[in-house]
Length: 192
Image 1 (spheres, rainbow, N blue to C red):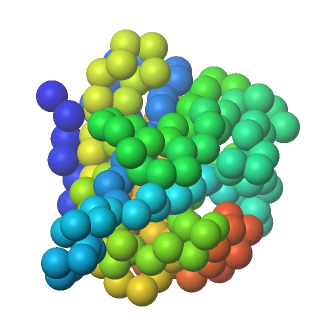
Image 2 (cartoon, rainbow, N blue to C red; image 1 turned 135 degrees about the horizontal axis):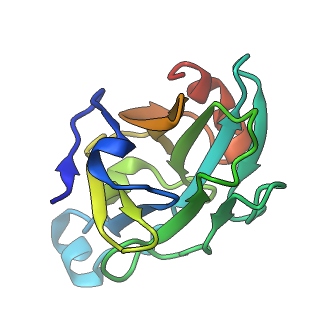
């Protein structure tokens, strides 16, 4: 059974999955239904959020970014599975795959974001979540509900940090400023 994470909670991936090698970090959201009669008649507008990940070394220097414009890390360990432009549909709207066995040895921390290149704010989003699944079995390991409403265009979802032979995932859920992944580096640094 998946663990439902609270903001600031950290868990060991070894505790929730046996011999994890590949994980998926999925993000899902729904466009908020506009308030008022006209909003109910016209329905929600399409909301384009983008999942991204920034990698850092032990010195907290950024070493790479994977997002809709750069779908794979140089070592091939991190892959963005494609851009969802609307938020329509059930389940994960965007997925980032991480092969923990192929990550460069210098990679110490991965910081996962969701942001809006189009400038949509989180006041326009409902039911946003981040979840981690075992990519080999499909089993959901943990889930975090992103409940931050506001005029911000990004959210630092979670960090994944190396701890010897284990990886620790921490639910962050803090607003970020930026429409692109590289603009979110300062927000990432505050959480590693």
